[in-house]
Length: 198
Image (tube, rainbow, N blue to C red):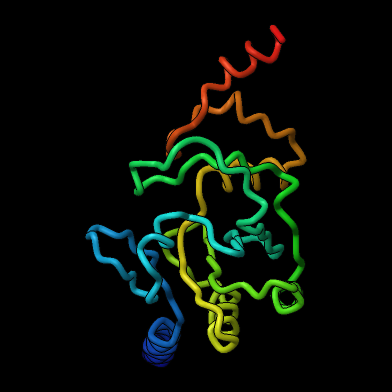
């Protein structure tokens, strides 16, 4: 009996030590929110770009799915006036067809390096506050080594909704959504009523 207790104690200590070692060596990035009016963020990105929510390329990594989605800033349809509340993303009328699917990080590297207009700024967007995804760290290192500035943000509400509809094979109907974390959302009912009367 003493021998069993001793073996159990040794295994417990060994497992605990191994587990602690893995945590200490694990790469983790916590997305922090700006609370000051500094002109430069932690990645050296000018505040005006940081608060815009969309850069040349927006690469979206969703926790627990292997596919990677991306869209370009130049795809966007800009609507309305300059937003005043820079803490929330401005509604940009994104559409599902703007989101392109890539199967792995090597493909997204090839796409970006093959672009005739070399991107200057890339956002790596993640749908969780804490990033442990190895793809994130590999992409960040790759872009930095290719002189492409990288910043990190959470996915916007618009991106989350569109990607969820894409992955579930559903129709994207923005006029039926009660937008909670997006600025300057147009009044879809007024737009739809106007379109019907034309």
